Image (cartoon, rainbow, N blue to C red):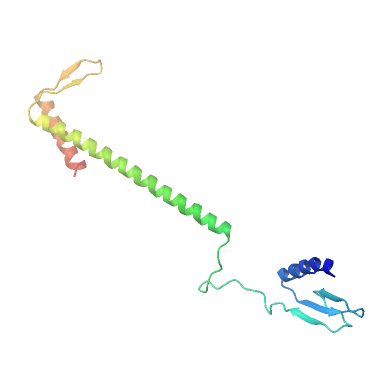
Amino acid sequence: MLHKLPAVVLTLAATAASGQEIYSWKDSAGRVHYSDMPPAEASVRTLRKAPLAPEKAPAADGPQAAPSMAEKELAFKKRRATAAEAEEKAASERANADARQKDCSEARAQLVAMQDGQRVARFAENGERVVLDDAEHEAEIERLGKYVARNCK
């Protein structure tokens, strides 16, 4: 009798997972049988009843079923990707702000130097140094002043 117990347990587990009714009965020799279909000639005892109606998906406003491991993993990866994108965007914005601040600092320093009357030389296309005359000097002061006013607030 004990050698049949694992088979009975596996049968019960398999039929329980499928959601069907399970029946138990004794035959004329006194042996107990388990099945998902009752015999017509024996008195049958129902061990487990099938659900009356198939389970429906929960309503949109009702309680949600617990997410599966795959759904949890997908949500975790999505959160991690979103956080990485936000961190990358913040780092890019910091780098842009630092570059803008450096450009403004250099432009202000050049403007102060030009306003103090220092002579400025530039390199021509052929590589020679060309000193700015008074008109070019004033034009450069005006250009730097507009740049600082527009970009360095």
